[in-house]
Length: 150
Image: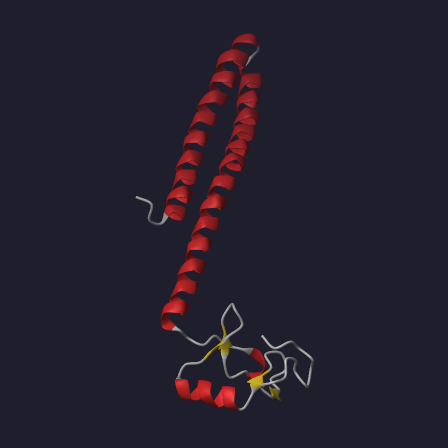
């Protein structure tokens, strides 16, 4: 029932727009041809119909565009969540700039694909994420650029 809720919200917005357009045309016709034509001649009633139909249709569009946008926002949030979960399940190493050999998780700890790479990198020190310089294990800042060790 709640699967792909973003798509359902967007479909609801589309259906609501079509219904609003139909009701707008009926309302504009009733006002233009029924009320105004009874008071004035038929030409003015047709012009009132056209004007009101245009105004009502624009109003219908503006009223559902936010609903459709919310559905799109929900879809995008679901895709982002799925991508993050997929990365966590696969434990893949994201691309890093500056030739860094390790990926870092949100707490700043390095994530290595295998134990051998982890052992080599911790024995030889740490690599700066900003400039890629190799630093000693006991240093808390990069000797090249001054970035704090994460």
